[in-house]
Length: 445
Image 1 (cartoon, helix red, strand yellow):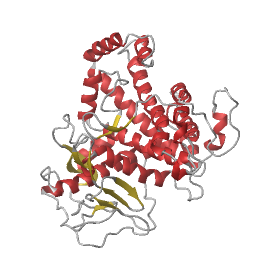
Image 2 (cartoon, helix red, strand yellow):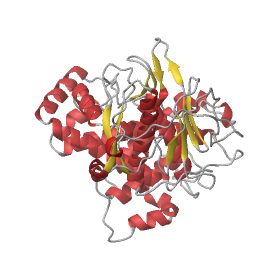
Image 3 (cartoon, rainbow, N blue to C red):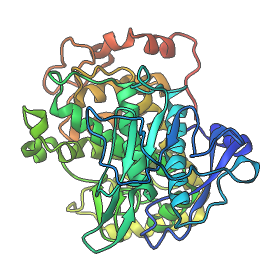
Image 4 (cartoon, helix red, strand yellow):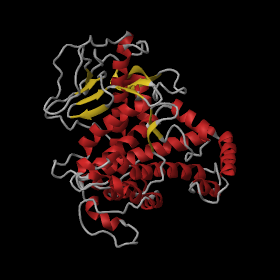
């Protein structure tokens, strides 16, 4: 979210304690205070507010599956009550009450972040059925999922024997809310219109939403930069999505997969595809954009020389002395750690806003990776005047993702560089007309 929103929530919002990442990790010692947008005193027992509420069943409950949908009508544990001043930061870690409040707080925080990038409220895709998202923090089930009016979490025992509640895993919760947000902003095709690329897009963008959301913890940003010293392409906790232990994670954002590498994951029958694997080249492309905007920033601000940012972008098998690259990053970071941090926060907020603008241009019926690429070119033009156009082109096309018109029309010829003429129809949509109209101030972080 824009940093001004965060300052306002710290002044007027409701306090909770949450884990920045899975508490099974040694680096996550204690929960941290977060401030949510609902004013202090406005969050009710549960916790609950007009947008979401926790329901903690007192008896074993199977996961929701159509036609069984919320609201849950069985017996429940007593709703968690607010503490002094209407805040919820008094709850003891490890208790059932803390777990319920943690689930609510993470999901409300992630919604605040993405509504900030979106530029206003994001109504639920099920709003004609209910205005409130039901949160179920405990199921005897080794998974988590979101659906029509609900998010539910179970428990997991990793391959190394580590036990964890998904209701206490920030990445997992943020990913599941990502699906709900995308259903609202992008829309949903019918069963007959569903494609493998739509499913893969959902998985990829939900991972990216979780990744950008966790960068709203100062502790995560500081620990990340202290560990890699600005060399973000090293394996670190930012690009390890949904960590389950010190050595296990569900997916890696900083991957080197191209579309041709995951061809086996695609299927003309969407239900038969491996949407998580198929989406990894798209996740990698968007992660590369985050790193590129960050590196452009530290170079533009004179923190590192051009040769160093170029060397850090090289593939591991290139003829580059990576030990030297790391030593140079170490020295540069030691001189200006706060400047590096501001460059990363700028890249975070740029990418969040660019994606939020791009998603509003997409049609779920013809949605593919190339349509997102095109929409991001248009969004970058609106937000920065095309400042990151070259980075977008390089990151997507290295992944073998080609620009495609958002609303139909002719594609550029093979080898032809994409131009905004290819997305003229997208410019005519109401949102783009608004942000691109002459004389309008471009968005600033």
